[in-house]
Length: 481
Image (cartoon, rainbow, N blue to C red; front, side, top):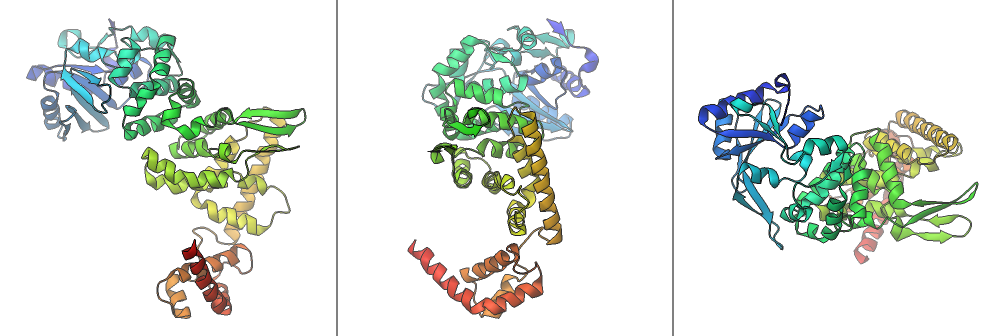
């Protein structure tokens, strides 16, 4: 056993050790907190294994710390927030999944059972809080050696570990990305042979694990593992279908080939060096998602994927619903996928202010994130070409800022509001109001009138009758469709 320096252990752990001794409990700090402390990483999430009634001990902790225990009776776990810390308590137990069950079967077990049921050796270490051995690291599966050697392996036969909870296969990919380590060959082989078993896990747990993977410093490590083991086909089939789709373009030395899946991972890793925004990372993963569907070869040009950005944007709502991702992020991701090629089109000096206005309005508050995605999408190994692309993006970005400021395009909408349109056109609430607002906004974006109330109102008065007729025709066309 090795011993952490006592001074490195925070007061909250000392306090709980004293509380456990006073009430006759034996407790251990387990899992990720121990691993991270060995790596020199401070964490505010601390997991405790309790020999005895973990829920009752959690209540004692909550009372002593003037907090409240959140009890999960079904899983026999409890969470207690204390200041900046989030403490989780669970009794020593065994846990397994039946072959066709989506829910784990949990039974009481010994401390050794609890350690053995954990996912990987690097997460199997425990910190003793007994008075006579306080601070000793209990390492039954040599996790410290694996941590030092950057190897990820299961404490038991991987077929057993992954059968107990198939989500651990995804956790293997995530920890490989987070710790930047290799998966032990036998463990990786088991993942490949058991990949289909991930289907018994609830979508919520799968999606939580997938988003956690995207938070790694270099997510491509884990995503490649999901692909190589066959898990990605079950977890995210649209992403899996990018593999084998070639980007082929004419260059100075003939055709250049890029696999779209590998290209996407490179773009994602580039972006991760710029931002921790996980939904911008997700949008980056999605930016070429519709290329397999729009693939077409054009002689002398190479592969064309015309319209992939619009189709990819339209797919997002369905992807979010299927994966049970938080829907409040759909619009943001749609916007970035839809617009990710637009800035490069606006590089030429002859581009009109109208095109600039439209991008500024359509991007809205996501403008800065859009340009981060565009910069990350520069994957050429030609440094001069990369520098030229960056300069072009900076040039377009400045154009947008200038036009947006000059034309007052922040939070852009029709200067004439819906209530006034109803009054001027003798309308009741109806789709015609939205159509008229749209026509005013389009006139501003086209530069026909300035972004000004008086100009917009006069335009409405001048075109009122025509727009009302067009609105009726539009409504009729939509009903037929």
